[in-house]
Length: 276
Length: 72
Image (tube, rainbow over all chains, first blue to last red; front, side, top):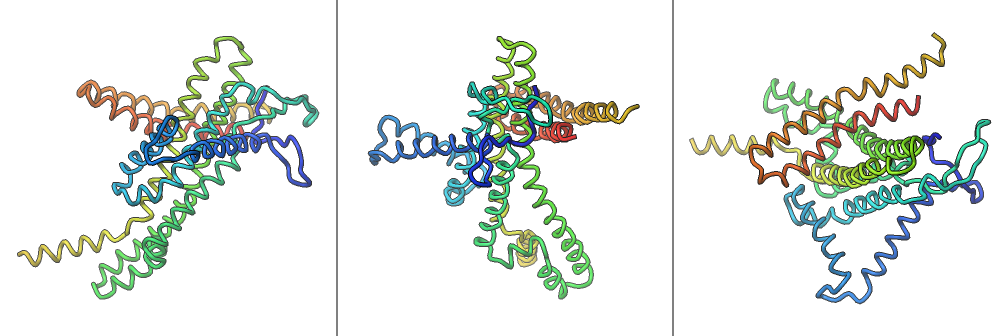
């Protein structure tokens, strides 16, 4: 009665193992392809019937992301990636609560013990999947930053040599501050890696822990007792999808914002000096 | 103490100790949110979502130790 930490392979195509979480991810992908096909059909300027639902979802996501970016242009730009991540993670999480996921499987002998290999396993309870999404999200934030701010301005957030050169005419104190900022920039590199780790581990841990929790509770008593836990897992599925998308959106927003607080401050001071 | 017993003990301790701080912080977040709602009941809808987000972040720490205790 244990859930293995890694997704178990259930079949092989040549040397490529097909794991049970991959199957679930494909189900989610097929679901979205079908939804997209339905949404594309007979599109008019005025939404009718089921189109209202899709339009409401997109509208909702756009207004929510606008609250974070505080700028409709950027919200529109980021919505394709953030919305995709949100919907995919949400559907993958919810698929884990479907009856049959984790319970229907094949009995096999692993390490000399009989164990159940489930045919379905939530895609987000596989660290490979969450790590891939998190890596894409953080890399996308860097790409957006590179395009928006230009390579020098973006890289100066991390290796701030430009700041030192700029500080030289301002005197020795400014140079010391710039050197400290250079060190802070280097720490930022570590924090970028930590972003990927914490994003992926948070989602993986929550969904995997939910899977284990449900398995254990089902083992204690199979009727009625798991219901509150299943409700909790439904909540977790929605909250974690929201958290993941919100954090991605926050990273994207921060990456496309200029790091030049000192400049603005300098301008401000200059203006104040003019005023006096 | 045998190595196996030690391993089991560490597994339990990882999640037990790792759960203390997140438990307190989730309680604290809930407390402050309830205080806020008590002061201004109309703001309940606005407070609820950030409260859940904050709880999810605090809970993540416990989840990390849970993952560690699973991998041990």
